[in-house]
Length: 328
Image (tube, rainbow, N blue to C red; front, top):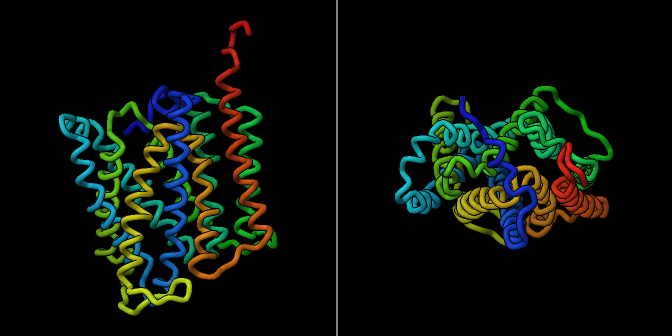
């Protein structure tokens, strides 16, 4: 069985040095913002007749083509690391790339987008639980408070305070998407495997595109397209432009910067900063689709930011605390 991460790899350094922390946060924000752009870009395509499966397959395939040359370049002199981590790359591409995407779109076929996204983004909590059970990293009080604030912020950003009907089938698909997202955060943060970030991204995207393509061939994912222009912010755009942006910006850039963030921040903190994707999605929906956020959603965004700060403070407090049996 493929080992997701060694104890030291996911948590070292627990509190990144200043420059490493700043770079990690910058990569994480870029990743969250670019991932958040995908929904607003895809929605007009869906409304014009594109199927979710076709959009996802093109998105991941384009990203694989963009990242693959950089991944091969990063592997110069280290080709053996791919053979040693073949199982990990397949797991990453299947669960973190293809699985998360496929399960999320399957969820929204049975339930509203908001609840599906909220369930998927319980992934940071799953990462905390995984780190606790697998690596013995018990979350401190500040980390738990930060997690609670971030969860409340998500509820407000997604405007779920009025309640929503949840289809059990949709909930199961969304939970499966959560597993894929949590896998993405854990594997992305693993430095002990020796895989350069670009190599992991390239391999995962290539595997993901292959899995999605096979799913389309056997009919699991409907593949339908259209050539009608789509509209963003009142302007008509040729259909291939948003597809190109989905592949290059919301997948190639998003996955590579996300892995770079995970390597610098660790899976737990990186997963919480990634909650900003929801805020980014709301902002881009406002700019591109004229969906103005409500005041309650803006409050939710502030709470998410507060939650991220709480998690970071919790990690600092844990790192500064004396180990068991040591004198303070």
